[in-house]
Each structure stands twice: as structure tokens, then as C-alpha cells.
Length: 463
Ligand code: UD1
Ligand code: CA
Image (tube, rainbow, N blue to C red; front, side, top):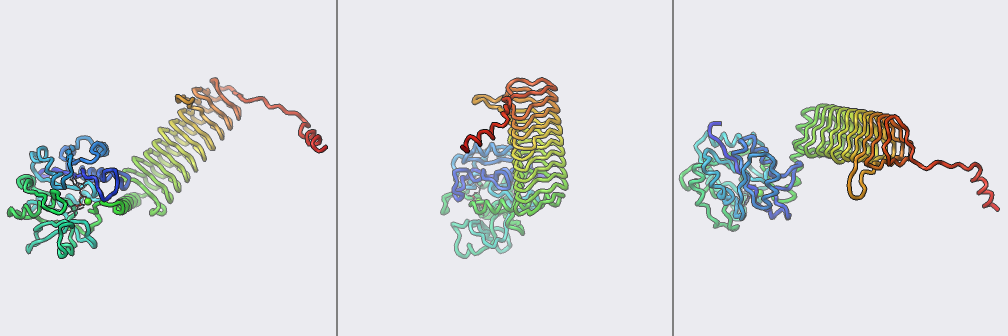
């Protein structure tokens, strides 16, 4: 690109119509905060050093939700309107020259390709500014675009200030502009607050530039949905559905089978390999990467995980912040909840909970167990009902089980504890002392058998 573009993203408003204590741009759609979507789109148009986010309401949280380093922040302590939001950045923005693109942080559906077309239209023509518009079936709430006899933009009239005739215009301002930076800054201080909201409207720049003898062009897009601005929770839900639909189509075109896609939620930053099958009502969230040939069972939730190839998550299983290597099987009804690493071919069955646990290759815990802060050697078998007692009421302790060990059903392993390689734990044991390798540990009361006792008791009671 010959002339550089600076992108300013407005994200300082509270968003009164959301009826929320949280700043609007922090609300999530498609699995991430609204402002993050706009920032990732902007990053495809300009380097981070030329991207600025205007923050105000919950400025700290908004800053934190933008994870890319190098992006600039401009503080707008008082929200006096969209025009004011750009003006407060003057000292940092004006010296950058080139073109100034303004985006609103509440429009997460915008695609970089569309913005590129806007930049092309502006940089190849002679207009002082080009803005994005669309013909909307119901433009209520949007600024209306008033064209002059030549088809140029004469002005933008906000909903609150529009006459009935202007309200009938269906061409709406999408809130996306590309200005020639020199002309923008030359005229920006002519913005006034003489409107029903008493705000500095960025949209007034159209009439100001026109009045100064410059041309303002409009680039009309076919699909207004791309520029849907979120003002209420109803629009938030609509945009969330559109973003998720977009993501599912992308994945299906890339070779992922999604059964009953209308029931499945997959976040924007998830990647899934070919021939993986996602069953109905599954949720795949956060920064999750899934390999090829996996199966994600019905009603499972997988969040921030890394799954290798051919991993099978059976229905109703929750997996969070964990890594599962090739061929691992988990569920149904299992819960893996924090920093687990399960190595190749290991199996985790129903009603098994794992926390901060490492399971070696081919290890098994097939039913009803709690394994916390533990390391389980390759090919070990953890019997049904095994509990690692990792918490003494004050601190957490570690359980280490060697390779090829066999832990009998209903064993209680009181941590810190070490169970040696190849050893056996008898079913029902309470293990409090280390078990050396290749040994048998029995930690339970001895069984007493009194032959004939029950029969005698029945006879006694019958008398
Ligand atoms: C705006 C446009 C309208 C357009 C619509 C498209 C104006 C005056 N109107 O209206 O023509 O059709 O977007 O979606 O621009 N913000 C700040 N600081 C402020 C005020 C707002 O940073 O002082 C931010 C908000 O956080 C938000 C964005 O600017 O992300 C847009 O503000 P919003 O109040 O939603 O504008 P609309 O009323 O939707
Ligand atoms: Ca808006």
C-alpha cells in the first residue's frame, strides 16, 4: 500500500442500551469480546503500531482484552460522542498522516476484504472521505445518508435529528470511514454539539468536508448484516449466531463433519483437523486446537485444549486447559479440569475427574476416580473408585505412581505418596506409606469369617 493507513477503533462508550454494568465492547460474540474481533480485522490492514483503540469505560479491562502487543490506546475520559473520541487522539494520530480509518468497536462482523475495498475506493479517487453504507430493510437507529444531485454524500443525519422524510431513507451509515488524514485534522475542530444528544458526532464530518468544497463518497455494500452494530442484547445474540454460523461453514468447507450444526458452538479461535466429527450440542471454546480424525461427543465442552489426532471425547465430557495426545479416549461423563496432560492412547472413563494430572502412554482410569496433582506412569491401571487425597485442608500434595502399576478398586491414596513401578495395591486399601517397586501393598482391615453365624442368628430370632 502506497500511502499508509492509520486505524482508530472507538471503544470508549458504556453502551447504555445494553443495560449492563460492563462496557459494551467487552461483551462477547462468537467467543471473544467484540473489540477483539475488530482489532483482529484491523491487524489485516495495518501494522499494530498504526492501530489505536479509544478507551474510556472500563479502560483497564478493555486494554487487557486486546492481547496483541504494540497496539496504541487513547484515553477518552469523558464520552462526548464519536467525533470527540477521535479528536482526543489528535496529538498521536495527526502526525501519522496518510489516511485515517475509523471503525466502531461494536461492529464485529466486518470483514477485512470489505475494508480493503473501502481503502481502495478512497485512495484511488479524489474524495476527502469515503464511508461505508448499506440499504437496510429497517435502518432504525442508524444514521441516514443524504446524497446530493451528483450522488455524493451531502450529510449524515442521525436518527434523533432526522425529519420524517429523512427517516424514510433506507441507506444507512455503517459507521466505517476512511478519511484523508490531512483534511480530517484540518477541519475536525469545526465539530459542534448542536444536536439533540449534545454530542460531537463524527458523522457531521461529512457535511463539514462538503461545506469546505471537498467531495465525500459512499461505498455501498450489498449485505448490511456485515456491518451490524450491536446496541442491544438482541443484536448481540444475532451477531453471535452470524459469527458462529460463519465459523461452522469455514470448518465444514475445510473438511470437518458437524452434525446438526445449529446446535453446536465453536469459538472464533478454534482450529480443527480434517475428518474430525463434532456431534450435536458440543461446545468447542477458547483457544482450542483439535487434530484430524477426532470425535467430539454430543453435549461435551472442550475449552482451551490441545487434542492430537484420533482423540475421542465421548458424550457429556468436560475438558479444560488440558492436552490430550493421539488416540486418547475420555468420557462419557468425565471431567478434566486444569493443566492435565494425557499421553498417547490413555483412557479416561465415566465419572473420572482429573486435575493437574499427567497420565503416561496407555494408562487407564476407566471408572469413578479422582486423580488430582498426580503423575501416573505409562500402562498403569487405576481401578474404579480410586481417590488421590491431595488436599489436607491447608495444602495440596502430590501422588506419583510408577509405570505399569495396578491400583485396585476403591483405593485411597493419601498424598504426598509414591507408588513404585510395577507394584500392586490391593482393592480397598488406604495407602499412607510409600510402596516400593514390584511389591504388593494391602492397607485394609483383615477379613474375619465366622462360619454358620448367620444361620444361628436367624434360628435365635425365630424363637
Ligand atoms: C453510530 C453513528 C451512526 C451509524 C451507527 C452504525 C454517530 C454519531 N452515529 O451510531 O450514524 O449508523 O453508528 O453502527 O457516530 N464511542 C466512543 N466514545 C464516545 C461515543 C461512542 O468511543 O464518546 C464508541 C462506542 O463505544 C461504540 C462506537 O463508538 O463502540 C459507536 O457508538 P454508538 O453510541 O454505538 O453509536 P450509534 O448510536 O450506534
Ligand atoms: Ca452502535
